[in-house]
Length: 185
View 1 (cartoon, helix red, strand yellow):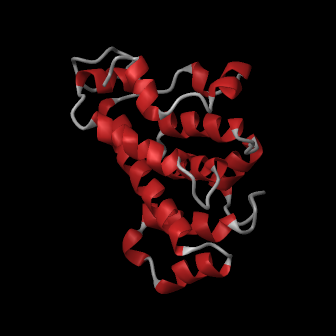
View 2 (tube, rainbow, N blue to C red):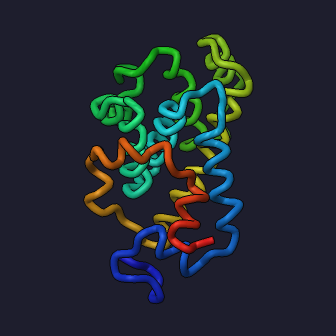
């Protein structure tokens, strides 16, 4: 349901960006840098973080779209569901659990982060760069979740199924290229 009169009744994120393009190019470049550039975290792990944070925020659009992308990179649907029920018993790599616990706390009660939270991530084998990337992805999706929810964007059915087309095209486009292809930037 659109919350802005100038948007369609059922707005897509592209509708929001068409109507409000201010800052879009650097925002999408940041998406590309954080989610696609080489780093210690795999693309699947980064998309898992994006989907996890969005699920914590109950942002259906971002959770659905990044669940889809994470699944296209091999994350199992049952892992994504289990993460939101109980992080400790979710069937994800044990190395990921302290990192996900960190971004969960950063999303829900950031003022309560302590050195022990970071130390748990490092003890699991992650570097400071990996933790920073997770923090930055968490921050980006808390930001994006507010844009999506604040403008009334909701997911269409296409966000709930991984199609052969999605699998085939996942590495072809960056976020910036997506926006250029839609004439947004």
